[in-house]
Image (cartoon, rainbow, N blue to C red; front, side, top):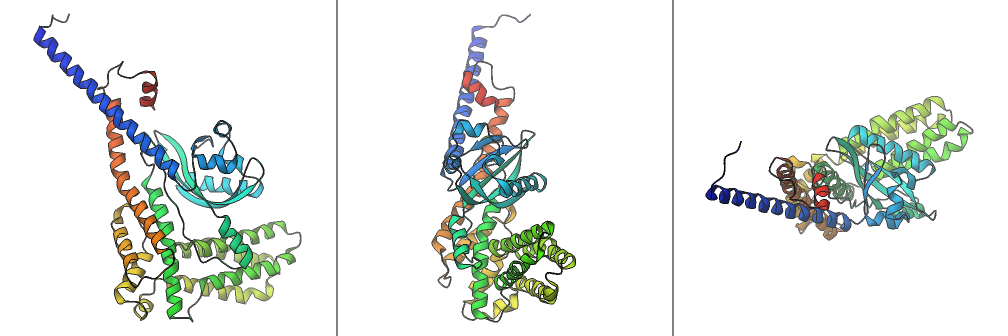
Length: 406
């Protein structure tokens, strides 16, 4: 049985309790601030933002998604991520979701079908996030209507790809979800800088292999002979998939290693099967294999240091840094290199389109990556303090208890 406490001991315990209460109140206040920050960041994203679980149940989205689809928040809460797609778009999105769940990240182009039937083309990205032993897909989408319209009007591959892939925030546990998504956005944006470097190479050496021209010719060969496939539905579908793979390589300006992988694992195998199973391209076999070989050479050009040294129209320090940074895969281990990118964009010899917008976007993404480390650490500390034995029952109101339990 506990002995009677003296007045001094009671005063000491009361003081300890008051300190505990004050500590929890401060933790609660900080947690609410971080939640508000997450919500504000998500609301400010220029595109659509979404989170859904492994069972394809919508968990979170932004107002932009409601506006594009025409479905209210209540309606979306009863829908799944595939319910805003139709036909072939639903199939390719389902495959992309499966790829994200298996590989950890992915992207896809598809048309969002609104409540009124209007379809809008979007470029979607996604990453897998493990939060509290549950699996989620987190991503965002950018409206590519103008790009699609330009492709349709000009009948040529677009050369302008500035991926405005921003990141979203997610409250609790992982704070801003996974840093991998931030760097995925950074690497997408760097694709534009890589595109501009290739343009400088071709300006200096007009005779270089042109990746876009080669891919366009391969696309023409597909279109010209598709009619000969007749009712061979499987081969017709294969030819359409091959066309999509080639368009993706032309539009995304991936790192050379990624483009080589795409060529060897997706484009070549499909061409090999088409040429083996159909006589439609019998007369074009030699040209196809020659084009694929030239395409591989064109992919390597961006990494050619000897060519870079010969680009006399650019200052030496600019061409060396530009090539190096354009071929860099950014991650948490080399985040500091983004400062070099920003300095590169300030170079007086750097004359590219959208330089100001590119610098602003990279600055924003760098800041987001920087603060995410701090926010995640602070959030985990808050969660630990709330879930350790330090909080006392009765410190939270009904709503606050529910929020803390989340």
